[in-house]
Picture 1 (spheres, one colour):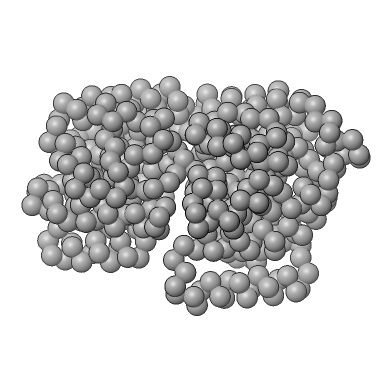
Picture 2 (spheres, one colour):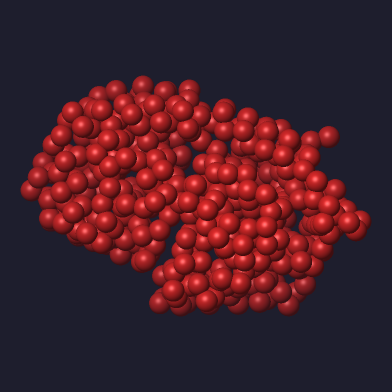
Length: 421
């Protein structure tokens, strides 16, 4: 019988979707508990039993099941969703919801764990998913299944270190790290941070969060676009202090006279960035805003990009960076410890301080003009993708971790009473 894995994650996230698909490719029986009160569905989540807070039509064959919860909790969820729509001052939605969703989700998640009896629970990121699982782990005690927490880029590096967010999150972060049996991160930096913040379970190192890319798929996409790369792809997310996409807009606005013959494409834009880009485009700048694209088409944009630009003050291994490298483009990225695990400045990419607009302009000029650098960097990135992002290799690694380390490791202290497994 296939191993039962319950994933607590955001169904709208491509990170969740591609990781769940990876587990299914291995052959596991996977269900997804959508911890967020709002619900949307990533295209990679297919033929999957989804637990959601409220029913919504699905474009594929997924089984949607509402959280098992009392009417009062359902009404509370509705009130929070309504408040989220009318509060126009709340730009950082994911941060605001993270303080509340786990409390509302825990009672439902507890019932699902007791009824379905998964062999393994995996939480993807702490806010809200790890927090909800930690509460249920505390309630069920030694009867709780083995628990792997997959640490994402802002879990600790932002919510645990930012002076404003830390007081609200530090106790919950420590609760996750003290209660989870196993921990894996999407970058080596967070392996270290987890230990510093009190990890008591076993560290399984780091692994790219989405499970990497199929080499045949990447080759096919690159083969469809063999011509000269005359595009620039920009991540247009502006959520200070996490994402500062407006800094990129300002830098490019000062270079419009140098962008003749180029197309600058902004994706994942927040409303303020979209508005600014469209205004500049109306004045003649070669800028455009991309709509949400099917994933294969999104990867094709990277295959046609000479270089990409992203600016953020905190992240782990950004999927935007991984996609850039995998399609042989050159990342122009804000300088972070986690990004340096993939990019050497001046060798396979260009790094800049997120707040340094003039410095970014100079990096863009290098990427525009230095053909020899771009060609060498692109070739190095394709090699990095082959060595570190191959989905088959990562799939085998994840299977080995689950079957030979997680499911076979003795956890006596937490399994003295009657077990679920």
